[in-house]
Amino acid sequence: MKIKKILPVLLLFVASSTYSVALEVAGYTFSAPKEWKSVPPSSNMRKAQFEVSGQSGGKADVVFFHFGSGGAGGVQANVDRWMKQFEVPLEKKVQTETLEGIKVTYAQAHGTFLSGRPFGPKTPNPGFALMAAIIEGKQGAIFIKMTGPKETVETNSDLVKKMVGSSLKK
Image 1 (cartoon, rainbow, N blue to C red):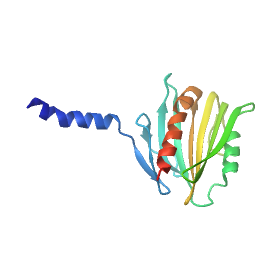
Image 2 (image 1 turned 45 degrees about the vertical axis):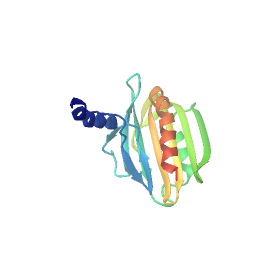
Image 3 (image 1 turned 180 degrees about the vertical axis):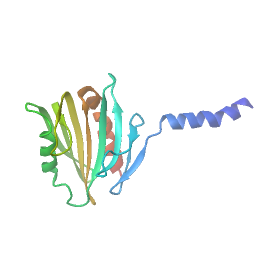
Image 4 (image 1 turned 30 degrees about the horizontal axis):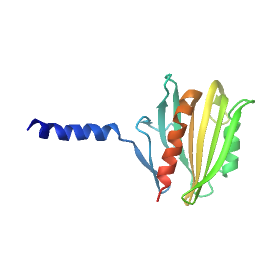
């Protein structure tokens, strides 16, 4: 008898422990990892924003952007702009793959990240990294950009790729 009473509570606990935030951007549903904390976007240009913690306590931001078809320039223009947010020298890697017939470009970099609003003063953040994905969807590109301490970004980079891959599965 006691098991029957405990079972629904146990199932609810198990379901909530694997829960991830689902969001839709430009016709694709993304399931953010349960470790990511959804926070209010700091700009109306952002479709969603998450705070991600690393093992050493450093926090990174994961931001989703979508400006419609042809908005925000092309893939290379965005990759170039993101790389310019780092002081030289920086280590970078850009790769493109096709998932379910959709082109996805991943951009990674690490070094001293210059944070701040466009055209405003910049704050140098040494030891930071970038992991970004550009999904060339039917309704225009979706930009997912994670920046923060290198350890935090590197720890969560595979989660970004996994999230992108699962959102594109038919």
